[in-house]
Image 1 (cartoon, protein in one colour):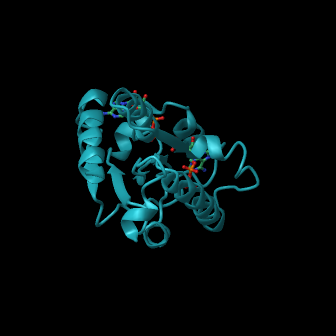
Image 2 (image 1 turned 90 degrees about the vertical axis):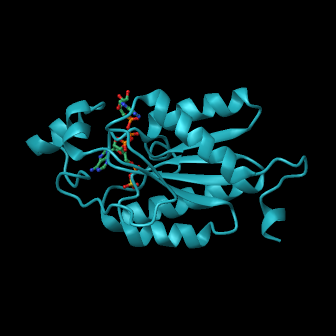
Image 3 (image 1 turned 135 degrees about the vertical axis):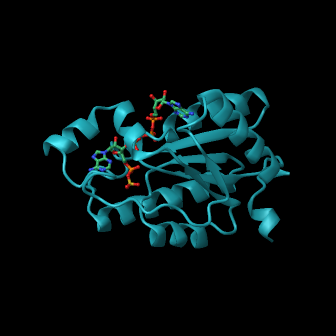
Length: 185
Ligand SMILES: Nc1ncnc2c1ncn2[C@@H]1O[C@H](COP(=O)(O)OS(=O)(=O)O)[C@@H](OP(=O)(O)O)[C@H]1O
Ligand SMILES: Nc1ncnc2c1ncn2[C@@H]1O[C@H](COP(=O)(O)OP(=O)(O)O)[C@@H](O)[C@H]1O
């Protein structure tokens, strides 16, 4: 039964790769690169990015713990639909709370779920600051910012950890693509 849910009518296997990590850790970058690599291998994938979902499906939500939980719940439901259609779903969302991640794991247990910890030290994420949000969080312009004045609980049982603080984007992507392929076979 488990197997059937993850395979679409044409035999494509679906799964959900849930990337969690601090802002600036590299979740989006790795998902986009991985999408490209999987495409080259003829594997259909789609990225659900927190930033993008928050512009539409989740635009009524903010960054309180409750809103983040609802944000993640919605993303998990969308991910399940894509996985059932045979897609490799790459989710790039901070997902800061352990309990919320455990609930997602339970919800997606029949959808080929794996939790990927995109592990980069806070100091380096802040140095990268790709969207300038750490700077705004330090100046008080942005509040409840993960890593500064909102908590990030590191995963204790991730299925894969990508050390993006010490690796190039290419090496992280290669490691991740290899994991996805092992997970599918
Ligand atoms: N207060 C606060 N805290 C954290 N993040 C903030 C905040 N305000 C805006 N942003 C931007 O929103 C992106 C995070 O959205 P997510 O949906 O992934 O967050 S969560 O999983 O619901 O915690 C996050 O994107 P990434 O940097 O790609 O992680 C930020 O760009
Ligand atoms: N090994 C790596 N993996 C991913 N990103 C990296 C890596 N090394 C450096 N970076 C850089 O870090 C930044 C990560 O930003 P982004 O992907 O938006 O993070 P997130 O989605 O986690 O907020 C990018 O500017 C990217 O070029």
